[in-house]
Amino acid sequence: MEKTGKPVMLVAVDESKHSFYALEWTLDHFFVPGSTEHQFELIIVHAQPVPTSILGLGGPGTADFVSALQADLKRSSNKTVEQAKELCNSKSMKDVKVEVMEGDARTVMCDAVVKHNASILVLGSHGYGAVKRVVLGSVSDYCAHHAHCSVMIVKKPKQ
Image (cartoon, rainbow, N blue to C red):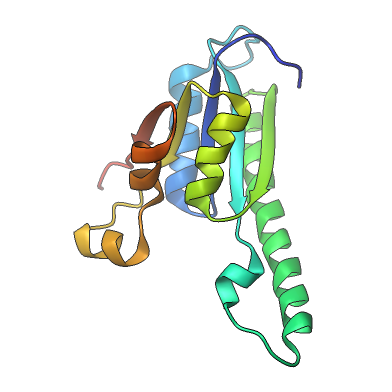
C-alpha cells in the first residue's frame, strides 16, 4: 500500500474478541464500505510475543522447545492476521495494511505509532478490573500514557 498523505489510524489486534470488536467498530464508524475516499489510512498491527519473553528459562533442550514455540506463535499470529483481513474484506475495506511486529504488545504499539507517524491508535478493552490490570498489565492503559498520538479505547458493551 502506498503512502496516501492521509493521517494514519493504527488498530491493534490480538486473538481476543475485544480487539476484533474494536476493529469492527472502527470500520463501521470511520470507513465507508466500498469507498476509497477515507479520512484515514488504516494499518492493523499485531504484536507477536517473543518466545524467550514467555519462557524466561534456559538449559539443555531449550533450543528445540523455543523453536517449536516460535512456530506456534507464528501460526497463531498468521491466524489472527487472516481473521483481521477477513473482517476487513467482509466490510468491503480492501485498502488495508496489516503488519506483525515482534515484542511485548505495549512497546510494539507505541513503536508502531512512531514508525508510521500515526495520528490515532485504536485498542480494544478487555474490561479488566483494577486487580487484574495490576497483575496482568493493561496494554491500553500503557499506550494511553506512552503513545505519541491520540489513543481510542473501544469497549464492548455489556450484554
